Amino acid sequence: MKDEIVGRGSVGETTQRLVGVGWSSAVDAGQAGTEAGSAALSTLGSSRKPGWALAFCGGRHDPETFLAALRQELGDIPVAGGSAAGCITNASLGYTGFECAVAVFGTDLARPRFILETGLDDKMKEVGTRLGRRLAREATPGAVTLLFLDALRFAGPPPQPHVVSLLLDGMHAALESTAPVLIGAGTITDHQFRGGYIFDGNGVCRHAALAIVLPPGISACTDLSHGCAPISGFHEITRAEGIVIHELDGRPTLEVLGSLGLKPALLPLHVGLSRKIGDPYGPDMESVFVNRLILSVDPETRSVSLFEADLKRGDWVQVMARGNADMLAATHDATDRLIQKADTVRPFFALYVDCAGRAASFCGSEAEEAAIVQATLGDSVPLLGCYTGVQIASITGRGQSLNRAGVLTLLSAHENPHPRR
Image 1: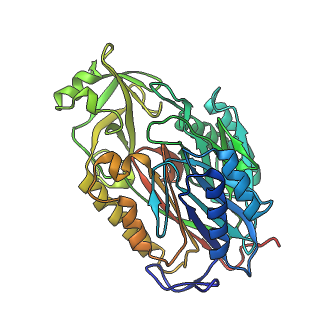
Image 2 (image 1 turned 60 degrees about the vertical axis):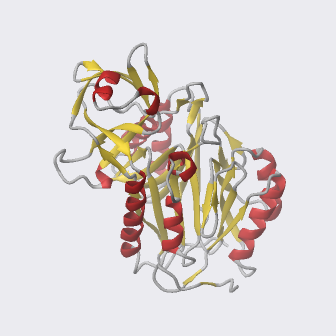
Image 3 (image 1 turned 30 degrees about the vertical axis):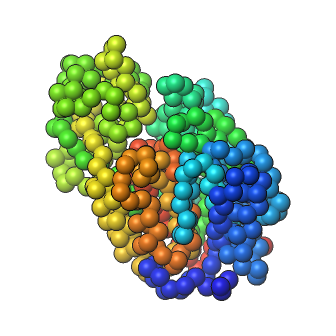
């Protein structure tokens, strides 16, 4: 293997390796940290020094043990990221709870700024406002910014999510004209939503949000897919309270959904309500839908609870249902679109933030949609991916929290990435 060059593949020409990616599925947390860190350093190459790392740890591992072993390999550098229901690299993917993956960024690139805000379990919008004010001071307009937070306030049952849309509302109100390009995730430990945490650069943290402001000279090219299709016309939300949608068109929500042939037991994590951005009667492109998955149902009140609280009385929504064939086709199309966009920019790293509900064993798909991303990228650019509870991407210039989405981002470095040696 050549350390300096990534082989010619689907994305542009050969490119200098600025990131090394490592993987482990070891059952022991310490061994997993050692293996993943060692493999990442090996692919980074002996001529380069690690500057910082992005790591995702399977939910069946002890995160402190994993992180300590990882630091033994990488040295005293910031480690960001967090828990994942599964991980994805160029050659591997899995979600048994033991998979771990690490991307090590060399010092050829400047170290990013790490901005941490805690207290998510209290007031999400206030935390977002504080985060936005700090970003306004420390980030240039349009700076590529990775945003990670743990997705759950309480594990339940039923699970109670951190309402990411409220965090983003507060953040964008404080940012005003300095909005960054956001890509990120709400982390979970497993498909049962039993917990979540982040790596905040120094250690393990819960009920917190970390913004990683990448240095000037780095740009992002992003595309997304969700593979959901509307199965209804537009319905008006006539009664809502936080994440709970009580009524559509003046009728109990479960009654309306039942009229579409949807049984309450099959609704959670498979059916959602969607708000369409822009012209409601325009083309049904993937990028114009913001989906809100149903998290739980209440047969007594005939209401549903969503992952987010941004759908309110007076909003017009459509009922969305997933389809595995649609999901696979949408992933293929989105990855192809992104490859075409990135053909001339020679990306050095690919980040795939994937909904845990898109894993084949969970949704019953005959194929893994993440394998489409792997096959399309080949070995042309280092890939790190995580299965998450919430996905975050910038849509029409604003960060949006997403459900059921796969968000693929290619990072490229311009001539002067401002290295700090």
